[in-house]
Structure formats: C-alpha cells, structure tokens
Image 1: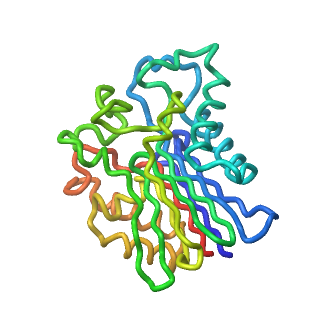
Image 2: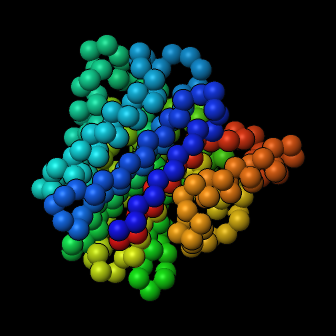
Length: 262
C-alpha cells in the first residue's frame, strides 16, 4: 500500500485551515483517509472563541479515530458522531447557532478486504481510480449548481445558502447534516487508488482548466501529492497579475491531497 499526503497553506503567514490524515490500522488490509477544508469566515463575529484550525483538528481527529475503531458504524454515522463530539467541546462557551460558526467541507473514505466506502460533503473531491484505468470523481456539486455560485464559492459564502434547504451543506455543529453527504461503496477489487483533494487543488481542473479529473488523478499518481500542489501554485503565480482565471478569488488557497494506492 502506498499512501502520500501533502498540505500547504495558501498564505505562509496564516494557519492552514485544511486537515488531512490517513490511517492503516493493524486489523488487516484496511485503512481510511480524511480531508477537511475549513471555511474561512469573513472578518467579524462568528460566535466562537476558537479558530477554524482548532475546529478542523478536532473534527478531523474524531473522524480518523472513529473510522478506524468503529467498523460497525456507517460513514454517515461517523460524521454525525464526530460533529456532535466536536460541538460538545465548545457548546458551553460559543454560540453554535451562529451561521458562521467554524465549519468545513469533508472527504472521508474507508476500506477493508472487501469494499471501499466513501463520503463527500461540499466542494472537496474524491477521485476513484479503477483497475481498468478509468477515473470517477465523487463530488457534492450543490454549491456549483447555485445560480450565484460565482459569488458564494469563496470564504465569503452567503449565510443565506449555507446549510439551508436549496443551498449547500458543510460540517458545522449540527450532526443531522451528515445525512446530506454524497455517499457510496464499491468492491475493493475494482479500485486501484483513491485521491482526496481540497478545492485548493481541484482548481487545477475547475478554475484553470489544465485537464480533466483523470488528468489530475494521473498527475498525483505519477508525480506525487506535493508535485500536484506545486503545479497549482505555479498556475496561481502565473495568473496573479492578469487574473484571467483567478478573477476576484484569492490567489492562493490552502491545498491538501491524500493519495492511497491500494
């Protein structure tokens, strides 16, 4: 089994709000991966004493632990439990009902000798590479389908559409949001590898149009997770002045990749 992980902040002077981990437990040919992209709130009150990195570290840690230790739980159950556990750590000090309470996108995958389970919530992505060479993206595209997606896709996403019916959903303080995730399972014998990516890396496809999902998967597989992040950074730097592709968006975003070759 080959597992690679790379994560880099968008700004070296700011904490990385992504979380990335992979586990390979001792109970056999199994493992799991977790990738979170913390949602940067606009400047101002978010009702919480804690930072986004504080939140993603706790939510990510709970997801990593539960996905490895609770084989009896579905991934939706695990996400709900992890959200509840994280909320319990600060519900007495913070206003968890605030629409900008710390939150994150989620990619979670778990595998054993027989099957691979996956879960995606919001705009991070999971790429599934099959043994026949095809690559299938697992996406939660609700944000992209919003009429005003170009205005709400960055850290200033409108609170009127986040975690609202008809909008899009992120992991914040309500365990019920786990039921909104895109989930599925595949026979392990059909899958060669998985690549989980935050939108700081998926912009290689979605913003810069350098290739399709299969091309991005091949880049990660052949050149490595760190090289994929470096490729995105080079594209961002080249467009920083003219902003043909970046538009009004941030030049650099936190970028994370976990690659697991099974």
